[in-house]
Each structure stands twice: as structure tokens, then as C-alpha cells.
Image (cartoon, rainbow, N blue to C red; front, side, top):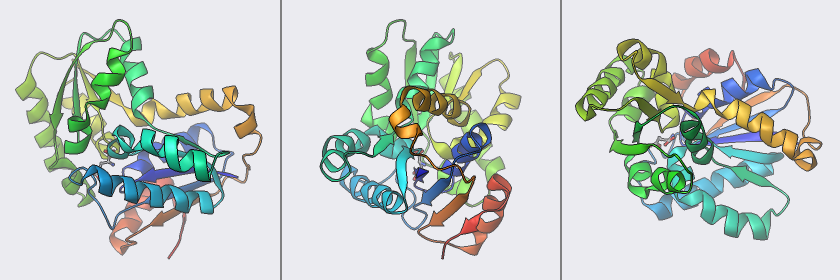
Amino acid sequence: MKIGFFDSGLGGLIALKAVAKALPQYDYEFYGDTANLPYGDKSEEEIFTLTKAGIKHLFDRDCLLVIVACNTASAETLRRLQDGFLKTEYPDHRVLGVIIPTVEELVSGDIKHALLVGTKRTVASGKYERELAKLTDAPLITSRATPELVPLIELGEAEAALGSLVATVRGVGEVDAVILGCTHYSLLKDGLRAALPELKIISQDEIIPTKLADYLERHEEIKSKLSEGSTRNVYLTDNSARYDHVIRELLGGAFIEA
Ligand code: DGL
């Protein structure tokens, strides 16, 4: 069986690329809901319905484990899906989010005050703050919604997106770390590090591979069922030709379903 990746768009491919590099032997299936992007401005109910459909698609495509790379879907929807849909319809399958691993990474570093940037829905959910509050030695966290970034990144306007992100970080001032709390923002990490070298930039594509490897080591019942054919399939709900180059760049080519 395979490992699935769910995201509202193409951002999750950055996380998949990093995971597939660290664990190349497994078979991966990506679901990007490009027809319904952006999720960040949608209601919780809409995000729930769309995320459930995406996860079900991945399970039906033989995924045993799905990483919900999308922060917006991880923020509120994930727990609801794990407690309901998963338990009743797919009790042997697993769905993992990205927020808890990110928060753990934050606490393990020497950080006093972090800025979280994410979609409106991720920031409004307060999920990062709630998860941090459960841990000791948690840094102070300030959050800012940056809804302009995802449309710019999807359109390939990375420079404009970076300029806007740098201005947001400078506007907040006294922080020593920035959490890129959205899959798409990982594309801006190098530019942000170059512009603000004094800050620690936390990018989920650098966290998820190790966390997933640890998870699989601890869950032999899952690991032993994963097939090792090194395939990577990408499915987009709006499979526009303008995405081809991004997929080629990020995965070095992959089978694309119609
Ligand atoms: N990929 C989503 C996330 O990680 C954001 C993009 C969107 O708004 O759909 O939060």
C-alpha cells in the first residue's frame, strides 16, 4: 500500500518531494485540490467536506497512510476526521497532520518569540497556540494571516510573495523565528533566509521527513504493509497544463492522472 499526501494545491508537493527524497523506496500518491484553492478563506464546513473527499480518494487509491500537508485542513478538520470518518469507515488507515510536528520542532529550538504566518483559517483556528500551550518551555507566539501569498505563489509570482512576506515579518518586529505555517510558503524559505538571516525559519518540508521516518519506526503494523515500488503519482482536481512545469520541477516528472 502507498503513502498519500493531501493538499489544497501544489504546495504539498514540496513536502512530498522532501519525504520521497528521505524515504525513496515507498510508493506515493498526491492529491491536490487545485479546483477549490484557496482553502484559507473557506468555512470550516467546506474545508471538512473537501478534505474528507480528498482523503477518501487517496484511500481508494490504495493509500494506507495520508499526510494532510495542508495546515488549513490540519488546523480544525483533522481531529474531526480522525474521531469520526476514520474510526467508522477506515479504522485500519491513518491520517497525520503537520501542526503538532511543527510545534514540537519549535520547542526543541532556542526560540523565545516566534511569528506564525498562515492562511486566515489557520490563524483564526488558534491551533498552533493550543498545541504549544500543552508543552513546557513554549515560546511566545504571534500570528499573522497572509492570504495574499497563496494566490501569488500559485501564479508563479514568488518574488512578489516574498516581498510581501518580508514586509509582514519586519512589521511585527521583535521575533527570533518565523513558522511558515502553510505548505506553499516553503517555496519562499530560501528568499526569506537571505532577506532576514538573523531569524530561524521553520519550514515544514524540513521537518516532516524525519517525523514520518520516526512514526514508521514506531508503527511496524503500518510500515510492514507499505509497498516499495518507488512510484510517485499526482492527481489534481483541476489538472491545468500550467501546473506541468511545477510538477516536473518538484518531482522531476511524475505520472499525471487525467
Ligand atoms: N496549503 C494550505 C495550507 O497549508 C494553504 C493554501 C490554501 O489556502 O488553500 O495552509
